[in-house]
Image (cartoon, rainbow, N blue to C red; front, top):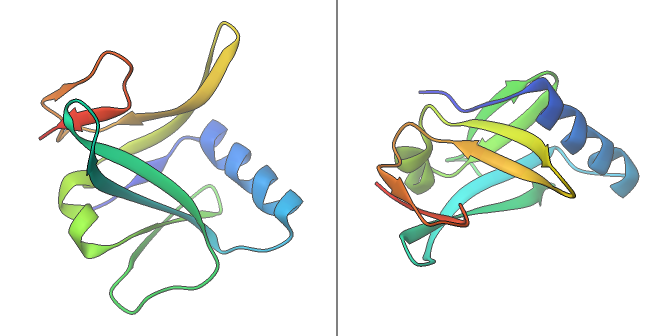
Length: 107
C-alpha cells in the first residue's frame, strides 16, 4: 500500500508548510460528499494519530487514516496548472468514475 506525490506537489506543500511555520505534512482523506459519492479532503498535519499511515515523497509526508487508505491506496497526488486555474489532481486507480469538476468520485 502506498500513496505518493509528484515532485511538483511536494514542492507546493513544502512551500505552504514553510510559510505556515509548522506542520509535519498533509493529511489526505475521503468523506461522503459530492455528486459522485466521495470527495477528497486535504488538511495540514501537526500531530500523528497511532493508527495513521505515513508515506513520504520528496521529503514531504502524506498522512492517511485507516478508513481512507482503502479508497486511496495507489493514489498519486499532483499539483497542476491549467490556464488560470491551479490545484491538486488526484490520480486514483480505485476511482471508477468522477464528477465533471473532479471534486468527487465513486469506487
